[in-house]
Image (cartoon, rainbow, N blue to C red):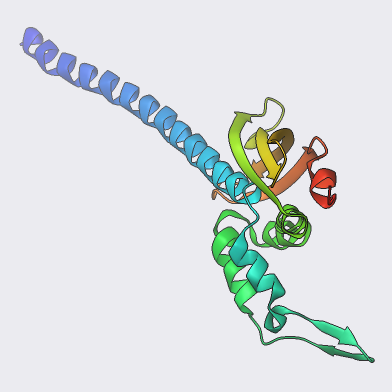
Length: 191
């Protein structure tokens, strides 16, 4: 009778050990999938940010229906939301927390595109390197090699560095450029 108990207990013990390994494995797989998803989000935003100028964005910026007119003591706001608002929301909002979306649009989203467009440059994110930061959870340091060219000139490159933080929902909560290797200044120049 005693031997019969062992035959029953041993398979249950083996099953328990297998379940424990499976649980640990699924936690690691889940963390890896989350990290991969975060890197995909960052790559998407950086490709959009450093490839352009975005002609549709420039057309919307040039359209007076998307402008706020200030003058003669009056302010005229376009109907809300404008086509520009809708375009930016579609392009960027899925990637950002609500507060960071507003900051990103006001600070970063259009600068490189407008300067490149105004001064006849083309630019493209050729290589994006993203690493999980050692000093903060869900923080990622990035380096983007941006190729740029003005018609009639040789192609050159700049190295843009920064950091992005992503919350547990997969939303960017912080977007910070550290250095753009003079890219913004260069795109502002007409020569």
